Length: 155
Image (tube, rainbow, N blue to C red; front, side, top):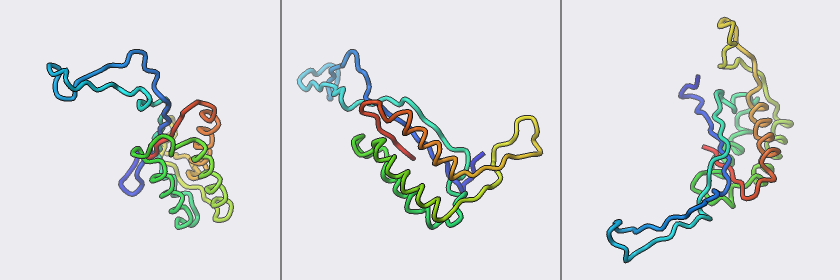
């Protein structure tokens, strides 16, 4: 469950699409073949992984001001409108190094998770959401770092 005070973050991993049969089309209409456009297969990407958080990942920070810059860098630095060459796994790895330094210097805390235990609705799990988020992003880097042309979006 996600409320208005902690918006979910969606992380997606993209790779260049493998277009088998490119298509040509007219910008005007299908009847007017005077202006044929060719589909540029190098600009097409397909989503190969996505993950949406269920928790407030920044709520685990002891000092929220410490993570504000990292959050801004993550959201703005991996925005969908940026070209894939500016949203690389290498860039995410560099950002994770900064986040790790911030976690070590500022600390993080455990809190009640919004995820309910399946068989016991009276109990909730405790989680360190910031460290969990960091570990998940680190896992993404390990899994996708050798995939050619891969890029990341965060929204």
